[in-house]
Amino acid sequence: MVLSNYTKEFKYNWQLAAPVMLGMLGHTFVSFVDNIMVGQLGTAELAAVSLGNSFMFIAMSLGIGFSTAITPLIAEADAEGNFAKGKSAFKHGLFLCTALGFFLFLVLLLAKPLMYAMKQPLEVVELAIPYLDWVAFSLVPLIIFQAFKQFSDGLSMTRYPMYATIVANVVNVVLNYVLIFGKFGFPQLGIVGAAYGTLISRVAMVLFLWWLLKGHAKSKAYVVRIKLFVLETAMLKKIYNLGLPSAMQMFFEVAIFTAAIWLSGLLGKNAQAANQIALNLSSMTFMVATGLSVASMVRVGNQKGLRNYYELRRIAFSIFLLGLILATGFALLFFIFHQQLPKLYLDNNDVINAIDNAEVLSIAANLLIAAAIFQISDSIQVVMLGALRGLQDVKIPTLLTFISYWVVGFPISIYFGSAERYASFGIWMGLLAGLTVAAVLLFIRFNYLTKRLIDTNS
Image 1: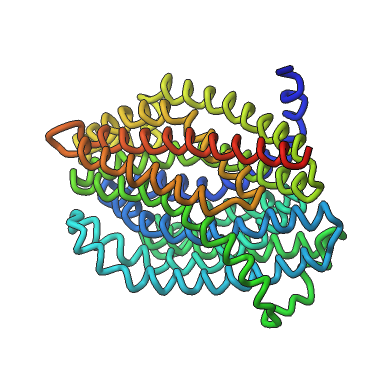
Image 2: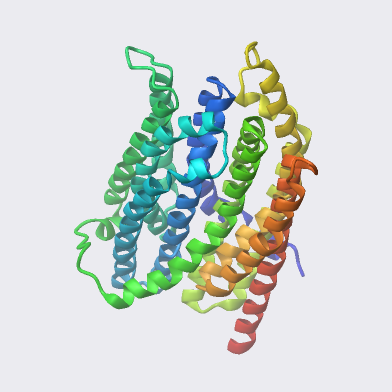
């Protein structure tokens, strides 16, 4: 193996992935800003946002996961120069994502009473319910945005979703400031103000991305004159068959992190707030890996369209290597600054909540050590998932992710996460185990499939 065969792809891979990373980080930054601003109100409010968002994370995972079916189809059609096939994939994907957004919004509204049945702190539940009402509706524009984003990524136009996300973040920060704290004559709405900011910023994000795509020659014909209700059963079925397993893959991973939020709630509001801090920080590094995953999906999809399987394998492994390098850097960052990073989230001058804040910071610092350890396995598994989606191989990876997170990881979280054992750190031991098993199994799957494709077509 000549290392330069892989490193020479780093520049193009980074150019393709970086806008996706920044766009995905933008989604996380919305949550980051919400958490920091809400954290100034107190640990109960921070825990309430954590609980409300735990429901959102599950719904978002299904919507975002489903939308990834659009990218490999667009990438393959683009490589083939088949506009009609690409527009059909986008139109049908947009229709299904829109329908799914409204469906998930209704499910979240019906799921609110579950908060009382989950033995979470009552103070936290009563704050979380009005927050969830509004933030749940933001699922609709978010998942519509995802359809446009995945289409744009499939055309290798990864910068435009990034621009839209930046605009959304500016809108969100401004609205959060004036609505949470009641500035410039606006009412002081607390965490409900954060929900309003999220909803309005996501609507702005969709409109801005559509406007950008409409103005570009490569994408204009795709996004205008969309006959959204003129549908073909075959294409609907194709996207559904790709999208549902992809949604379940993301669901299985996000759901175990959500389960960690709920398990932390059983340990008390401080453990739940600490879990939210560590989860939000590790989500940011995960979005970097997700950017590489999208690059992997696009480039593998292109090579699949060209039927160049040797290049497909080489390019995928170059992205895999870049992911390993970045993940190692993040692991060192978390380990070195595990005491300092959680302090960003709480008011260190808050005398009234000083004892609670100190406990939250101590727990969060320990969780960041676990987060540092699983950076590498998290990067491997998400890049391999992207490559497998590029191959349009989704069913077996779905089974592998279920085994990793729910047969291996979750029982470990349950056993070691009790107050009598390792409490919050024990919960994250399960996350580490699940991510590691997923990384190994998905790597084996990709290695097997690409070798078989090369042997069959050589």
